[in-house]
Length: 143
Image (cartoon, rainbow, N blue to C red; front, side, top):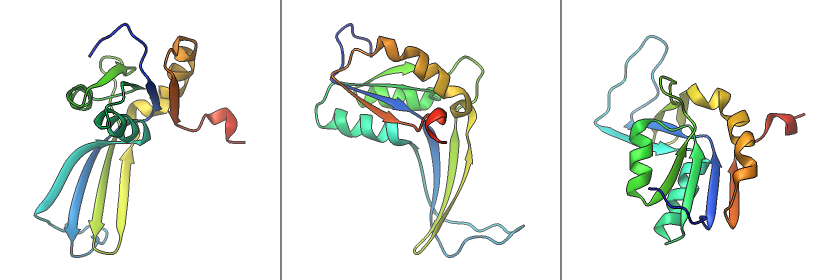
């Protein structure tokens, strides 16, 4: 979705393709496979969930992130403008979540998110939005 007008909300940060295995009887032990009939594939990350929620409320919104092709298309369907900072051939981030009724575990491949921060920071002078939501913690603030 392209537009020359400034969005009301800009979200910046990591995005993930989420593979969620639900209603497991228990988490698998090392070397073991556990099966389920309940599975969801979706997109997530703070920048994504904030952008989608805002767009569903009718707020003009844009996201800057490193997105897989499916995630970028899904966000466009949600009426979120997308600036995809993932370059051709770079892998996107994926999280697998294993969920029982009482607990959950995650495994994440960080992909583009490992190199996303400098790309986001380099674009900051171009921010034209009324509001910006930073869904990442800059490394230079972590000490």
